[in-house]
Length: 147
Image (cartoon, rainbow, N blue to C red; front, side):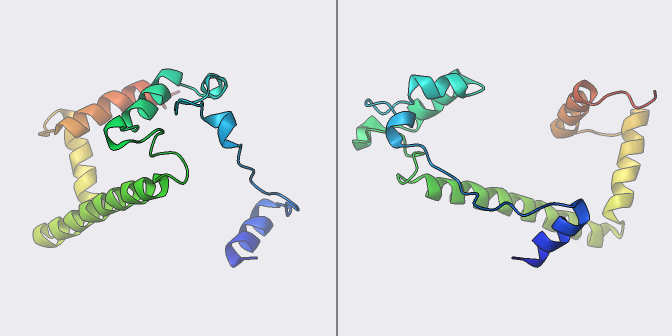
């Protein structure tokens, strides 16, 4: 047992789970004979049309692939590792740019973000498409806190 588990167990008053293990469904319950997702599995997914399209897009008939390469054991781990690595590299690159900007301008990122937020509220800031999209998304998702 790890130190982190012991910390969480004592903090949140958790008990050990004895005998728990993950079970993988057999392939014939997930995949149909033609390489598509089994219709019974599609019924349990939140957006069946998206997953049907995803499987179709990741099955390359020109390379003699019968099933999607996202299928466990058929390259899914490589795709997941590549996606995770690219996402992590993007996060690290952004953080590096934030630090470089802070050292160049001699302004802490928190102070810069606070000033930018005040400018956004006043309507004086030059906003990018990302901040505009975040503003629209936040207005839809977040509840008014002035209750």
